[in-house]
Amino acid sequence: MKAIVTLNAGSSSIKFALYELLPHGFRFDAGGKIEEIGTAPRLRARNAAGEVILERDWQQANAISHEHLLEDLFAWAATQLGDREIVAIGHRIVHGGSDFAAPRLIDDALLDALDALIPLAPLHQPHNLAAVRALRALAPHLPQIACFDTGFHHDLAPLTTRLPLPRSLHERGIRRYGFHGLSYEHIAKRLRDIEPTHAGGRVIAAHLGNGASLCAMREGKSIDTTMGFTALDGLMMGTRSGALDPGVVLHLQIQLGMSAQEVETLLYRQSGLLGVSGLSNDMRALHASDAPEAAEAIDLFVRQAARQAAGLIPTLGGLDGFVFTAGIGENDACIRARICESLSWAGIALDADANEANAAVISTGDSKVLVRVIPTDEEAVIAHHVVDLIRSEGGISR
Ligand code: AMP
Image 1 (cartoon, rainbow, N blue to C red):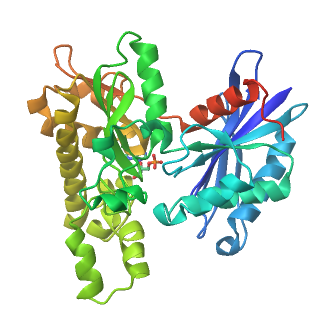
Image 2 (cartoon, rainbow, N blue to C red; image 1 turned 180 degrees about the vertical axis):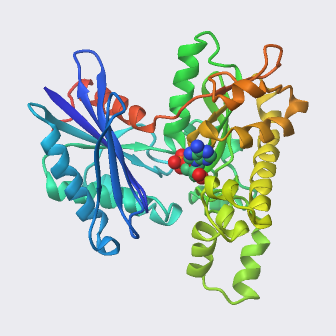
Image 3 (cartoon, rainbow, N blue to C red; image 1 turned 60 degrees about the vertical axis):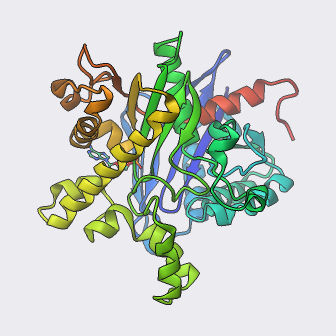
């Protein structure tokens, strides 16, 4: 029996899943997450029935590297395999740049090309690639496949990719790309399953997690999105600022004397919900707090989400559907209600009870816009791509 593994390695977490290959398709077998890497890493894995099958933390936690954690993870996975053999590993790779959109087998040349994109995604890309290298060392003959978060946005119209800067910079790759593509690909697929004829029509999908963005989709294809050149653009996030007057960046460096690295750390790691609240990047912690700064951070998050969603409607030419996904989008009825309230002029009418219950459809029967909650599953999208490549003509053997 054959199996594949998917990995989504970030700066402070590694999500993983094990899928068993079936004659047609694949089946989720087990999966989970190592969280709080760098401070107090802990792992929790569940089986297909949702039962916790492993919980573990590490001694001398802050000294444990990603590589060490991956080694431990693979040692554990080996004990779970029984008569199954891992035949490929799929990775979420945040940035594929202009050249890479479709999933592909990772070789030395691709790794070099993806290394060159690290400055465009400094929070994610180094960790994505470090995981690839760690697994190459552990299992040199195992094919590894890159699935790009930028891929879903690869066919954006030229105007949508253009920044209002001199044209020569666009030719050098300074353009809008878009991210969270694996999550939006999953949403588009689910909408196709639910409404095969028009995949939801003109839809805004809101991926609201620690990273957050919006995607305008028409008939299941991305036509605009709030993240651009980097995953720093667009909505305010857990620790990222989102879109900002570029004059602020100049001021920080020229007037306040901050170095480029300090500005990078500020914008990626110290801003967003964490920066405005001064308390936490975690939405649950902000709801639980009485501090006025926590309330203000939530207010700003909602304001930004509604404002930027409204900004996508002209490109869509109207709005038929709205989808909430990711940690906040799937679970936080209060944030959903407030965003929907701000967009009521666009035809959204929320069913308060359905919203409180995290139902699949949370708009009223006569709402002009159908509002759904769809759990994201980036791992399943990666698994799909890996299986497609394995079964494609010629396979992926090295
Ligand atoms: P993600 O990056 O998709 O894992 O989402 C992380 C964000 O989702 C954090 O801000 C969490 O506080 C938030 N989140 C997760 N579960 C809930 C919940 N039940 N209610 C509110 N926010 C949640």
